[in-house]
Length: 107
Image (tube, rainbow, N blue to C red; front, side):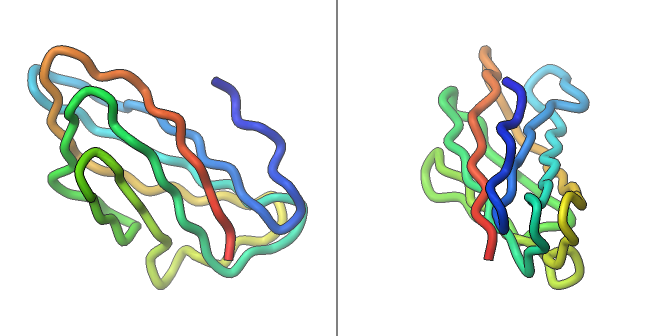
């Protein structure tokens, strides 16, 4: 689904699968600031098909069950109005790899 227009001071996140192979895939999430600058961001999504993240970069990522929370790293939290940054991860999948909806909260 296309990202919605971010609110002032808010952010949006767009999830894409950039590469996929039997049992694994590489994902990328692009975070875009709204009409005002932000000093940090947190994205969150829930995998519906048992996918599990094994490594990530350009983010501080944690998982609890099927819910994944990814926060900005020290160097990519500050975004000017309309600016964006991306982070990536490697994860496993088995049978189905549906694209989750991702929320973004600015700080």
